[in-house]
Length: 123
Length: 123
DNA sequence: TACTAATTCAACCGAGCGGTTGACTTTTAG
DNA sequence: CTAAAAGTCAACCGCTCGGTTGAATTAGTA
Image (cartoon, rainbow over all chains, first blue to last red):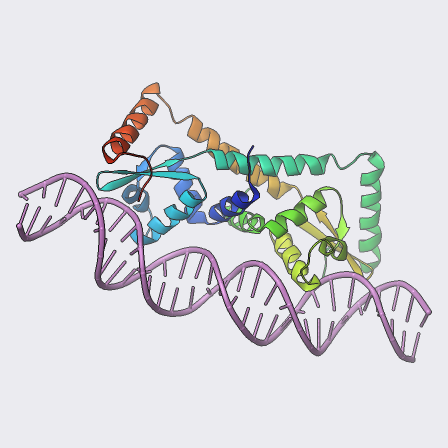
């Protein structure tokens, strides 16, 4: 658990970028240096370095200097926080039917709304 | 599953904002109108409306017009995509020890790196 | 010692974001 | 019919983001 809300902001933010998710995916296979991580991309090294810094700040990556290079390794806890938040939210939603009635009423309201207009969805 | 990568971008992006996560939390209890959702915040209605639009675009919320108001309801699929991605990535990472050796070597490299310098973490 | 490799830093750029305001549309109420 | 309610839209503001370039730092190497 632990999930301070401030962290969730930066973790979700960090994961909102495809390059950064790709870096995470690469690191899921094991540690890599910044240079190794940068190779697959056409970005500059500095660019990738900045991405890694974002991941570090979000606690998703640990960077430890090793000679003139820096080894990066995945830190899985924030991933668990994200998965937890999402699935807790989803299962809370799923249990919103304290009574079966709830869902029936929701459905009815929905239909009542979209029927006269002729369709679902908002302008 | 289904998770088109493009979607993950917008979903993670949508969830990176605390106001938007709060809206999701509110909607997890059941449908609400835009006005109802806006009440708890000190933002303008237009501001909240924009947030909801972001959630809609990410597929997290369905808006259906009902008279002069708009009913918003949570759509749980993207939450599952997020939870799936995070936990799949994490468990792939957890299985990176094809051999026990792997982890031992990783640890050794880490220690070798941080020992002479005197600590872990990068400048 | 001087040179090169690996990485970060600082400054900069254009684009997008979060938020406000004010006009506008549509629906309900008097 | 007129007026108010509920939302959205468009324009705008300041700030952060993703990315580049070029200089600076740090560590191996000849």
